[in-house]
Length: 430
Image 1 (tube, rainbow, N blue to C red):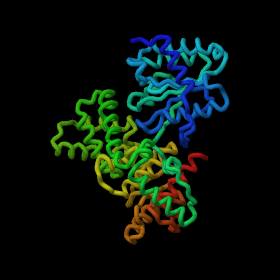
Image 2: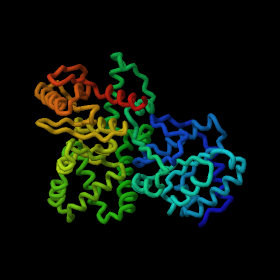
Image 3: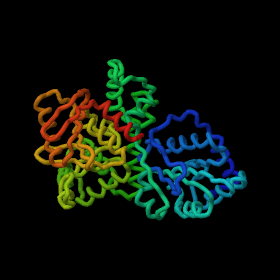
Image 4: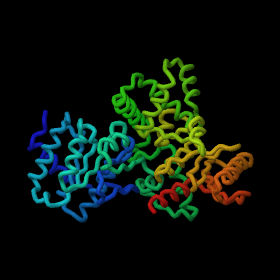
């Protein structure tokens, strides 16, 4: 049933009066006055809506709330959402606040993909009205590559991830002095919780007994609602098994050929192209991230096996039930680097180094470097990689060890994970 003017006015006045005092600030800052449509992307339940509402809360400090309109198109009052509803919404807004025709109005459209052909309205609104526009949507239905095409240079895209370690500390009201013995103990305890619980904001406020079921619900929504519908996946059970397989082999180099053969041995009927396609779908939905071997040769880089990481460590615990804390810690370090906006490579010479940000950082991750054989291997890999990349410093992230090692080709900082994760967030915030 089409949206009527009366109902549209109710939606608008509800939005203008929406209380926002309960919000906890995230580390992500969206631009406030850029001549671009801002698209907010990321996995389900990572906090895209909250980030937009936080910006509205900030704007309310300097302008009347009726110049800020937030609309969620998953609201049942829109069902089924139609393109014509957006015109009704705009008409209702300016009939309520005609004086805003002479002001800049900030429109926040949440789950915009629920409206078929939404981009036609958004382009017209942007071209004809004095406004700023912020869009969010379920990741697999609002892909960054599609936004770039449909909005034709009018947009800037921002990724929202689950909570960083620093955000997790703020959400759990953790006070600490990272230099005191007590503070280190508090941080280490919280790190161990974060390693298993993950960073999805909702879990902070749920009893632990509901965490695994909640994460499995997120996974099922992403796989069966978003990806299966979005890409017409014919075998959603295979898609789920492939995700479980990848999370089981988290941070290990995997060739598609090996994955294909392993799945065939499990009785699945599939082609190698299906494996490529399904992995691509999982990446586009911000569930998995691919890390390639670094090489100056594009061909060499393309023929080497890739490593995969999950958007949040809770996915691994929920789907595999295994601890594997070393791989989980590596995943956490990867996501910390990813929040900086980088997609690192791994380096493989005689030894492997987990992460290389070209010209910037070399990072290895080791749960426990107290064993001399393990320590020697990790340091040898970094020493070799520093010579290969011509960097003179590198980092070894461990669960709890701290120190330095001067090697032939440069200095290795040995950093506890709690410090490293907080340092990365500090660099993100400038």
